[in-house]
View 1 (cartoon, helix red, strand yellow):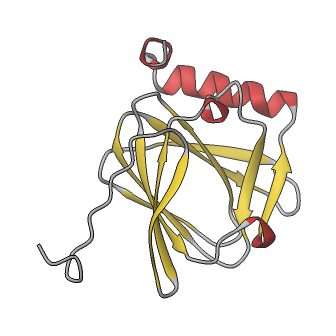
View 2 (cartoon, helix red, strand yellow; view 1 turned 180 degrees about the horizontal axis):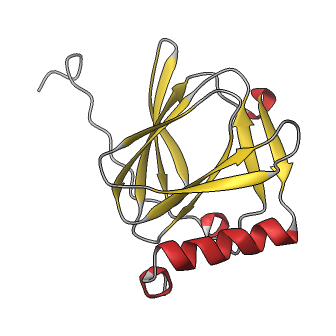
View 3 (spheres, rainbow, N blue to C red; view 1 turned 180 degrees about the vertical axis):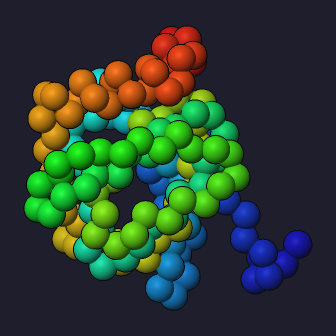
Length: 146
């Protein structure tokens, strides 16, 4: 196969890995990472210049959308379904809890980086909300992550 016509990429490691950059867009994969377990999530982020698309390819994940201005007042959980595109709008606080077998496809602007992303450290009460929500929404979560 002519590599000028087709590139193929696969990522089986842990965490976030950009796979394809082209012009102004990037495709990345997000896989299990300890920091994405509900009891270990310590912050939400928001991208100030771009939307970000999440597509759950396998496993289990809960996307949390934070509402509020500079601080997050409430969080809405969204249990992700395989193959559904979730477009997190520019400026929306968000995080995701992912199971050990999860793979999420991400599409974002190529220049998305720490310099144009804001972070909000969650409170202990908000952390408890994340844990309780994931346990309630995905009862098999504990078994999936042992």
